[in-house]
Image 1 (cartoon, rainbow, N blue to C red):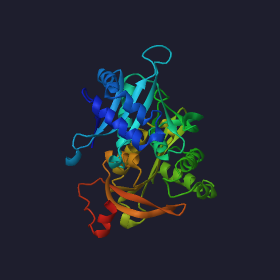
Image 2: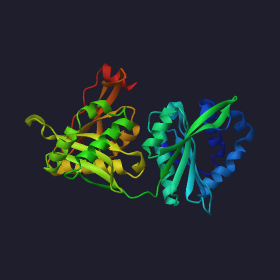
Image 3: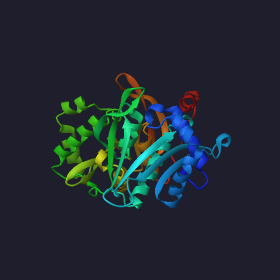
Image 4: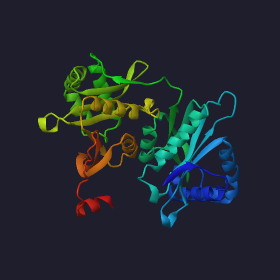
Length: 363
């Protein structure tokens, strides 16, 4: 799968993707399938021309498998609200869609990243979008990219006379810069507050619940800060405008047999600080600490469906080494997680043997 900008001559192919999107998820878009069909592929000629000329941006996902090679299976657009004047600093994301056969591969996130990069390069300060209330997958995607909900329109669209509410979401690209550093003495309460926020905003990501964390009174976090200040662990934080907006923790193994390994956990970036590479910088800082300590490897667990987090870890060099289909449970439902390991030595970590159970888990 390749994610790239749309090219000249692809208006008809892009129109075909749009028709698939409207047929697949009619409730997610303001345009109807009949309206799109009536406009014809010519309606996309100007769109593609504007994108090629740099007046707006359209990312597409191109299949590379033999049976679908060259077929477009996803699209995401972004256009400026105005070329000049009081609204020239704003842009709107539209038309985000990925074909069913290409889902679960991080395609939507990759297209959205390219759209945001275009906005930055074009001097856009604020990016906005709308998402239908109840579309949890899309909402999760946008939040991971740093968008925050700033309001809800209870009557954004009408479908058969029925009101369709939409969340209004915003990403600030000209927000205050984020600094990544080691936690300092006395920051236990602030770090604990951030941990509670991470559990509240991403309850399906962590094995601990808000209630379980609150029951501790913050004692484990205060102890962690003391360990980090003493050099026995690492707690990296992201600071923006005097507030902690991100964290990542590494601890070496507790026993002599596993002290050569570090365990990375608790990685979180607040929505208002996302889309600036903060998670990557936190992970890099944690890995650098492990190298400085002479550790030979770093391991972590990540939800199997958290493609954005997996992409961050893979860029840092982590490799998937196993899959636990029932790592923990949320509301009684099993949550699958990948074990990922980064080797810091010259030795190669052998891949686990494959058996039928492993093969089934890949299907």
